[in-house]
Length: 279
Ligand SMILES: NC(=O)c1ccc[n+]([C@@H]2O[C@H](COP(=O)([O-])OP(=O)(O)OC[C@H]3O[C@@H](n4cnc5c(N)ncnc54)[C@H](OP(=O)(O)O)[C@@H]3O)[C@@H](O)[C@H]2O)c1
Image 1 (cartoon, protein in one colour):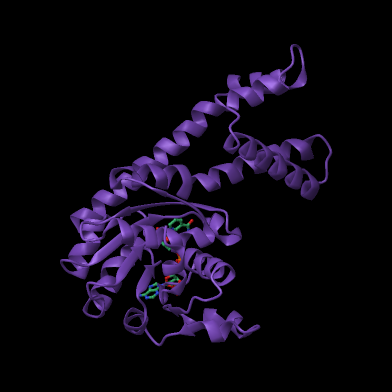
Image 2 (cartoon, protein in one colour):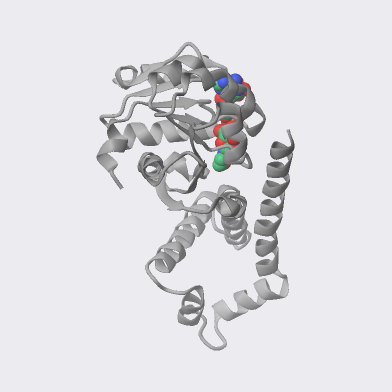
């Protein structure tokens, strides 16, 4: 990946809500050389930029067209229903050299290409809200007119907020279920485990911190190469506490429920994709 290329690009963000703001904060922290151009339906949100030297690095544009005009790479972070309107608005300013990175759930590259015009470079990305702490897991895929180098450049930009994987477009809906939505499923699991600690007498804040730290430990072990079953084998001694807890989970169908959460979220992402394609 040519990271130097990514860092030097003039980058725009249209729609600075939950995800757009998380990406902006990630880029500000990770890319000191990058100039960032932003626009939003409500520019009142940008008061925080008055702190420190942020105004020198972030240009608040009067409108979306100005972002498109002044940026080489535009990150589109508006809601899926607003994508068509915004893309058609900026299309005249997006020449064949510019790259549009859309993070909108369920909006296929071919729909964006149709709104933007033939020959325009589109990268579709699915990050997650872990971007707020630069621990997102993102997936990217490229449209018909974007090359491998364009996707690498987009990955270089998104690496400011966490890990990035290249995917086939047909897998983007599963990624939406597994990681885009999945981070909320882990939050629910951590919350439920913390409730268990509270039930048994721990103060809530402490219980939540311990549950979250424990989840992070499991995640780090798995990413380091341990299998989930290895962690179970290393903790579940015969007649011990862990096997009792695992039995309780198994008997209440927790695994099936979590699988279903991903499957249902993926199904919904597919429904949204179909609606977008039909529009
Ligand atoms: N949130 C997630 O966890 C997550 C994860 C992965 C992908 N995504 C995708 O990221 C996108 C943004 O999601 P979000 O949760 O960040 O939504 P959000 O908080 O509602 O952010 C969207 C932002 O776009 C602004 N906006 C609306 N119309 C606009 C326009 N015409 N021009 C410029 N800005 C406009 C909104 O302003 P107003 O609020 O004033 O309308 C808002 O600040 C969605 O497409 C979603 O599918 C989200």
